[in-house]
Image: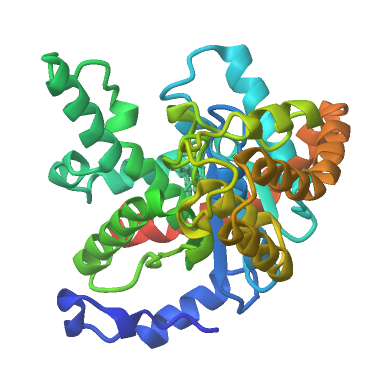
Amino acid sequence: MLYTQTISCPIPYSLFTFSVPFTLRFQTATLSTMKEISLTGIKPTGDLHIGNYFGAIKPALELAKTYDARYFIADYHGLNTMKDPAELSSTARHVAAGWLAAGLDPEKVLFYRQSAIPEVFELTVMLTAFTSKGMMNRAHAYKAAVQDNTDKGDDPDAGVNMGLFTYPILMAADIIIFDSDVVPVGKDQVQHIEMAADIVQSVNANYGKPVLKIPRAGVQPDSAVVPGLDGRKMSKSYNNTIPLFAPENTLKKTIMRMLTNSQTVEEPKDPDTCQIFQLYRLFANKEEQAALAAHYRAGGMGWGMAKEELFLAANRLLAPMRERYNAIMADIPALDKILEQGAEKARPIAAATVKRFRKAAGID
Ligand code: ADP
Ligand code: TRP
């Protein structure tokens, strides 16, 4: 599909009609393909979990079938919290291997480390000039940190580094630099993509032409929020995750630790309010879901059995992925080469965006 940004123009844009020149511009900027571009990144800040898989990796790989896909390891985002070099380096490879084990084909998807594309950081600096501080004050992660500090009676900015404060700008650069149309993410990331769109609009409004492309979030309704062991959103920060590549016995033990209420085996149970069932739905087909739901409602099924069913369905999907993951991690040089090759292909695209912006800005 050709790029027609005029349709969703906010008020300042009504003065301009730029669908024709922008279309021409993006014909040259998108590697001679007319497909829309899907882009997403994952920070290497810990073990991948099934929330990451269903919320980000799986929908992204689904989109890669029909979109021009660009997926990456957001290692400079990781640096905000990961100060141990060995840990950051090994987690970055873990996440990269995770994508490949989940089915990413580096021949079809541009796959790279953020740190290998220095143009991202040049674009970040340019974008800071178009980003209001007030917008950064409103970013969820920063606001949550300030709230936390205030609740504890600490200085509001205690422990907040500038990387956290400006996080949405770096993320906007990641997205904008590859002319992304859609960004598959979980619901928690939507605000960042809206901010990226706002920043683009400020840039384009300033120059009176569409220098940068406006991205949109792509959230899968079924897996927008995958619940964790305790029923809250599954997240490393809540320590309630089910790791994606844990050995089979660890997977089983983790699932068995899921929090349940004190209903007896005999009591009928409601699948719709149960996080075990919510997770089961992600792994099981429609018939299996209907069968387990009926079992819930009929009574006579204890939580242990529901967890066992969940484990079996999860392991069916995860066992082959785990095997591929282990094989990839056994050859790190080959993994690094895949990422380097991806970066080589990605850099000219990134450089073209920066050049376009610099020219519009009068820095040429
Ligand atoms: P975490 O919350 O564990 O730190 P990240 O913030 O690193 O996870 O998330 C990486 C990607 O996975 C993001 O696109 C995010 O939206 C998605 N994601 C993370 N947890 C979940 C979840 N529980 N449900 C759906 N998507 C999720
Ligand atoms: N902020 C995302 C997260 O916490 C990771 C990320 C960095 C990202 N840059 C991105 C996601 C660009 C999508 C697009 O999960």
